[in-house]
Amino acid sequence: MSSLVMYLRSWFEYVDAFPSSIAFRESNYVYPATLTAHIVGMSFMTGLVIMMDLRLLGMANMRTPLSQVQKRLFPWQIAGMALSFGTGLLLFYGQPLRFYANVFFWIKAVMMVLAGLNA
Image 1 (cartoon, one colour):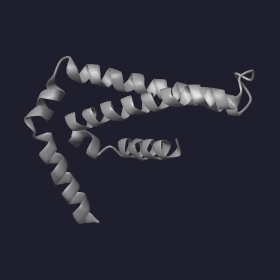
Image 2 (tube, rainbow, N blue to C red):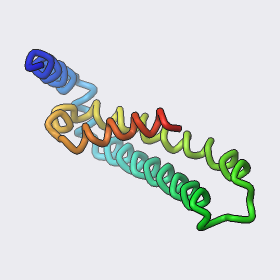
Image 3 (cartoon, rainbow, N blue to C red):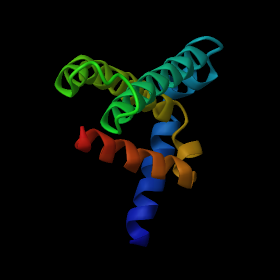
């Protein structure tokens, strides 16, 4: 197990040293724009999931059949998740060592994978 951790650490250090990774994280415009898009994607996806959950609980949008609500919301939920995933990969590429040691990042990553599999 420790050899895997050391391998991952060395791989993250390798990616962190890429000139494009350095340029991305030091950019005054691209990194903040990517972070903003990431937050928008997460908010979009989360809001739509909450809308669907409220409908499933019978607390909102009761006049519309569940199948129609699901048919309308699901493509937008996937779009929000795709935006979050894509921008998340870019953010990770820009600062891999920052995320390597962050337990909350790994929890979030696992939860996002599980949410994607559940969709």
